[in-house]
Image 1 (cartoon, rainbow, N blue to C red):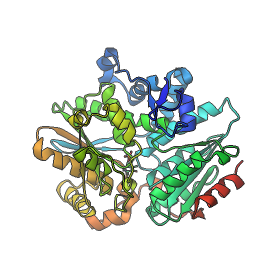
Image 2 (image 1 turned 90 degrees about the horizontal axis):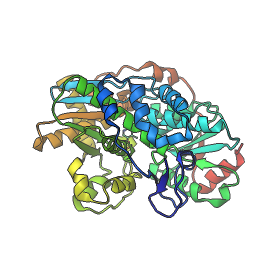
Image 3 (image 1 turned 135 degrees about the vertical axis):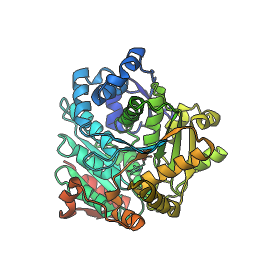
Length: 435
Ligand SMILES: *Cc1c(COP(=O)(O)O)cnc(C)c1O
């Protein structure tokens, strides 16, 4: 498969090159040259396939012949080692739990897949890569866990000081080995900005081959389509025969954009809801057709505190810049912290379900959509385990949350981090510590 740059000013590249570079040289996002719907024989067998078979069929065309099928199958099997339960909350409502991986957020799927692809490519090259990644909370942990010990890969994580939860900070600062955490004096946007500057900095090139593990990287983004298939398969097995509507708590819009890809591949999803917090660049775009990024504001759903969603160009491309077409399959709503808090309480009181603040926003999006479209089956994505936002969740539901073993394990570790307050310091750090 060839990938072209959405800025149209760089040459098309294969999968390996797209993964190794993250962003195209013209700063554009890579996008697949074509997307072919899955065949009739896939759909004939869909209900009897296991997760590994489904995932392999979904990703195959995007990798092409750059990873042999047997190897790709192994990568898929090693990536998907945990369940994706669809938990029904009432007759017309379920949540798709994406938090059963090692760092308890959906980003484990893309992080693990990308790490294994790079690991495969690195078997035949001596070229070392540095994965430079900005995190608003969950990406850092997933990337740290996914890339731990992968030969030829150094990981450098930038996170905003004091703006990630305690557990999130432990997940990204206590891995050691090839993982380094940098605490940035600023907000998430500052971290993202420093990463972008580093990518553009020609004088860094002799020292480091930089790539990104944010959802701009195709190997992080595309595997996120897998679990939409798993959920739809499960609903079909349960003989749900209403239109499926998925509500996706969104920040950088990689997750929902992977859902759109699943739909392009033929998956019967009738509508998507992009649910956001007060960082509402996308819902504003849906209202007035103007894409106007704003600086991010801090909310209790911190993984979605993104003012300039990086996957917007891909969504635009997918719908041919046609807002009317986009509105046909996607709605978007924003919610305040107060509403999020109340949603966690309502869910707990009415269904005994403990949602995290991001899942709660997904739930709110569905509720809003159902006011005018009641005859649907709604699924909201539970993108992280509530334990990752312990303070906020326990305050909302006034009950203690059980700490799962993956988290218990890291609670008594000591964080190791370096403080950075300017791009200059980051650059010096990257040069001084290059291996
Ligand atoms: C990253 C993240 C999101 C946002 O996902 P995008 O793909 O950036 O839209 C939502 N919820 C949680 C818990 C996350 O970690």
